[in-house]
Amino acid sequence: MEKIKEDVLILGGGMAGLRAAIAAAEYNPKLSVGLVSKLYPLRSHSVSAEGGTSAVLNPKDSFDLHSYDTIKGSDYLGDQDAIEEFVRLVPEQIYTTDHWGCPWSRNPDGTISQRDFGALSFPRATFAADKTGFHVMQTLFSRAMKYNIHFYNEYFATKLILNGGQLNSVTTIDLRTGNFVVFQGKALIFAMGGAGRLYQFATYAHSVTGDGDGIAYRAGIPLKDMEFIQFHPTGLVPSGILITEAARSEGGYLLNSKKERFMGTYAPHKFETASRDVVSRAIMWEIEAGRGVKGEYGDMEYVYLDMRHIADKLDERLPMITEIAKKFNGIDAHTELVPVHPATHYTMGGIDSNVKTTTSVPGVFVAGENACVSIHGANRLGSNSTNECLALGNVAGIAAAEWAVSHSVPDLDVAQVNDEEKRIWEDMLKRDGGENIAKIREDLRINMDKNVGVFRTADPLRNSLKNIAALKERYEKITIQDKADTFNLELEWAFEVGFMLDLAEIITAGALQRTESRGAHYRRDFPDRDDANFMKHTIATYSKDGPVLTYRPVVVTKWQPTVRSY
Image 1 (cartoon, rainbow, N blue to C red):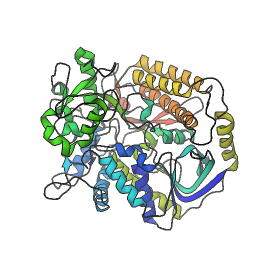
Image 2: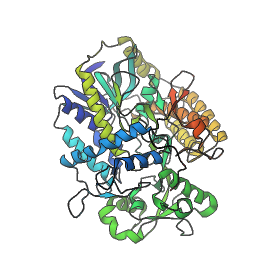
Image 3: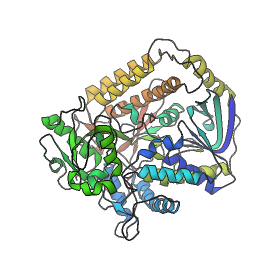
Image 4: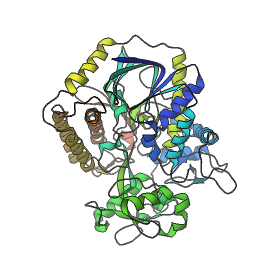
C-alpha cells in the first residue's frame, strides 16, 4: 500500500478540476495541491465542449437577463439565489482566461465575440470557434504548470473513506502499475464529471461513467435531482458525436423527411433556438409521426440538420463540426444535409451542493457536472456548463484552500482502507460467476435508452427498475478474465459499471416518483408541470436496500413560475 498526502486533493482533471487546482494554488502557494484523474487531463471530456459559454460582457445585457434565461431554461427548478450569484461570477473568468491566453473569437473591433444560443434572450455565448472546451482546457493546463500542483494521472478512485462523518482518505488503483494507493488531504474537491455513458446513444466520451457521483453516494453524501438527464437535439447519427447548438444558433435548420422546417410548430418564436428539451421532444414527435428519415445510417431514424444556406460561415465559425461530418459520415455540410437525433448530453443532477460548493461533509467540496448546485434545475440552458466549471471551480478551489490552511490531515483509518484493498483484490478480481462485465454494461445502456429516455411513462420506468435489479444480481457473478496488474481495463470497467448501476437505479426511481413533466423529464402519463406538488428537489441517500428519496423546496427569489414557452 502506497500513501500520499496533499493539502488539497482534487478528483478529476477536466475543466472544473483544473480551474479548482489553479485557484487553490494561487490562494496559497505554500499549499500542495494533488490532482487525481483516471485520464491524462487533456483527454478529459471537457475538451469536447464546442459552442460557447455564457457571460454578461455587453453593457446591453444584464445579470437579471442571464438569471431569468437560466431559471426559465431550468423550468423553474433552479435555485434562484444560487443562479443570481453564479451569473455574477462568470464574466471575471472569461477575462481571466483571456489574459491567460485563451483564443476567444473576436469581433472586428477586437472585443470578445458572443453569439446567440438556444433559449437565450441576448447573444451572450462567448466562444472559440466551435472548439471552446479544447481551447479553454489547453489554457488551464498550461497555466497549471506554473504552480505547485502534483498530477496523478491514470489513477482510478474506488472509495471515499469517512470516519465519524469527517473526511479521511480516498483509495485508488494506479492503473499503470496496479498498485493500491491511498490519498489523504486536508480538503477534497470532487470534479469528476457527469454520468452520461449510462446511455447508449450519447455525446459523451466513454470515460464519463459517473464515478464521482457513485463514490460520494456510497459514502453517504446525498445526490440531488438525478432524474433530470439532458438530451441534446443534435447527436450525429450513428456515432452520437455532438453537433453543437451553435450550428442552429448560427442559422441552421432542422428538416423532417419531407424536407419541411418543422420547429415553428413547436416553438413559434424561437424555432431551432428553443431550449434543448423542447427541440429534442419536437424531433422525437416528428419521428413518431412518421416524418423521420430512414437511411444509410443503421436502424435509428433521424432528422436533417441543414447548414447549406450558411455555408459561408462554416469554415470560420463551425470548422470542427464540418470536419466531424466529413470524417465520420463522408458528408460535406456546405452542400449536404447532416443526420441528427437526440443524444444523452448532460447530467443536471449530481452531488448535493450549493453555490459555495460545500457538501454535507465538512472539508469536501464539489464543482462542475459532478455537482448539483442547483443552477440547471430540470434542464440546463445551453452555454451554462463550461462557465459553471470555470466560476465554481474557482470557488471550490479557494474554499478548499481556506479549509486546508486551518485544518490538518487526519490519522488514516487503516481498518477501512484494508477492507477496501481486500474488496478489490479478493472480491472483485477473484469473482468467477461467468457473467461478462461488458455485456452487463451494454444491457444497462439499452435499458436506459429504451425505458428512461426523452419520453417516460410509469410501466417502462418500473420495467427499468426490474431490469436494473436483475443486472445487479448478474453483477455479483462477474468474471474478470484479465488478471494483469498493468492497465487492467476490465477491472476498471467493473468498478465503473458498479457505480453506473447505482446511478441508473437512482435516476429511474426519481423519474418514477416525479409524476409531472418538467424540463428534460417528460412523462407521457403526466404531461403537465405540477408546481403544487413538485416544485422541489429530489434528494437520494444511500441505503443497502436502494436509494431513499426525500425532497427539498426550490429557492424562489423574484421570478415566480409561469408557463414556459419559446
